[in-house]
Image (cartoon, rainbow, N blue to C red; front, top):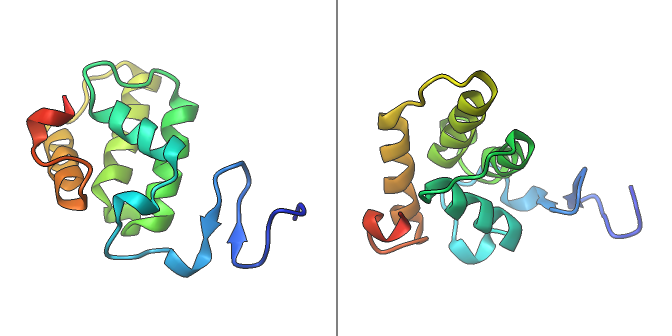
Length: 115
């Protein structure tokens, strides 16, 4: 571990993983690191990120700090990364679930403001 990391705050990159808040049922927008928030909002926008590694970075954070493999933000990020890697159509229903989740979490008041 480098000097900035402790046993409670470990990461493989510059986005910390807060061990105390892993696999939580409730995520507050203020708890989301700025970079992850930007990527997440980008995934909801008309021009989502096109670099799968960037998308997977957000997926990893949501998996760890959200509800794991069932987290809608994680699922959409994985779906979008799959789309980028294989150039196959993405799952529209999963995208709608993702937008609903962002409203529930507090990223926006309504889905239309995310697009």
